Image (cartoon, rainbow, N blue to C red):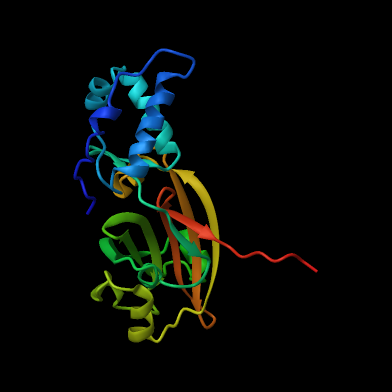
Length: 254
């Protein structure tokens, strides 16, 4: 759960009205707020409200909003719909490899948590049928989960799993590592995946679930995973761009 403790106010000697001059007031305020982010405010603490910042620095609401907008765009702050603006933590860096979210976060010393937002048995959508090699009318488990790291929303994922391979998947504890469940309950050890990655802005629904503003950058992963030669999983994951980054090792061709 996001820590909504307010960030401490700036020391008295750092609080003053901004001055007229060649540097726009929103740029001056951005520098002041950035200094607080880097020296005083704790990650995921709430910054002062727009009204408080207007009074504290003698500026207009438009000036405050522009300074905050730039810091959100830079990934130093993030907005939570209906709650306010918060200090962003460091991005979690992940190498591209085949592992469950739970194991990935554990290796980074973070406590992973999962909220199951829905699980149901449905007729497979066309894209899922094509990815999983299923015929018309085949049924799949439609599983949607919110993934958290250190109590903060990290990603929303929606996956499809063939009923024929995992007939009672919905009866399992799906807040735990799904790959561990597939291996232990169904002898389906995920050993290969094809994945595509792109970026897109958060819409209203995704923003509310992930705790980001509409238009915030998201990293989207679409993966088809197999166990042996059997397609087992067709999943799309939306990761917060302010909380996640990818590391890749590249080698030159000979």
